[in-house]
Length: 142
Image (cartoon, rainbow, N blue to C red):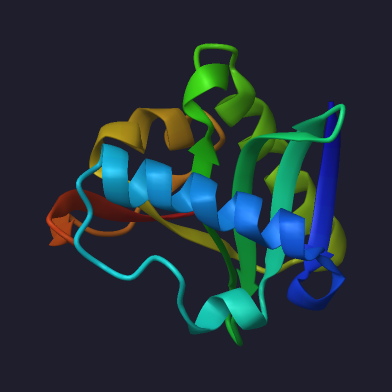
């Protein structure tokens, strides 16, 4: 299993399409999302993929902000779920952020049902549950 961290300009056309397809299938199709998944952050963020033999298995992105670093769009492709790849990916993302941005606070906007999952990494809730794109979310920080 290999972690790849790339800027948009470093991704091939094939990698970009694979990432967009995975995000649409997860956040729009499976979760019945009613929003545009691709946004302004995709141009400047770090795209993080967990791959095996060139096949995307999990994905997220890292966004640097003035006061913190965020990660989001965490997904595991449907056919690779139940293999603890989400746990592996999040652990590697935290390590990557701490290496690239030492001392910066890490913040996330998590789907509320994943609160305990993120707490297991040391995150704490910083908001009550609220509706974001018609899905319950909660703000958390590490």
